[in-house]
Image: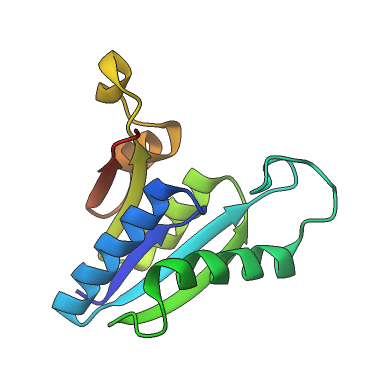
Length: 138
């Protein structure tokens, strides 16, 4: 295994996915590619300012990775930022990877059985195996 792609968006689900990907990469001497997808319509803070761009996305992704990985992540990490819909960006990044890792938020009750739209798209369309890392809320 050489490359593990993981989606990051600053959520607890993506943090859990990144932690899992780092542990797997360490076990297999693989590189983790942390992908942060952004668009003008969907910005990390939930607001539309019209000014969020590539440098903002890069800084946001570096902060999200640093918060999980710390100064010594135990594996090589590359950060990729893409102005694209998240599922499409992850599927494209996974084209030359060995594994795709995504987070999923636990919703409780019947909804807990369902995956979010990004993880569902990845599971159904990825060119490589997909690991969905679940978190439980409250």
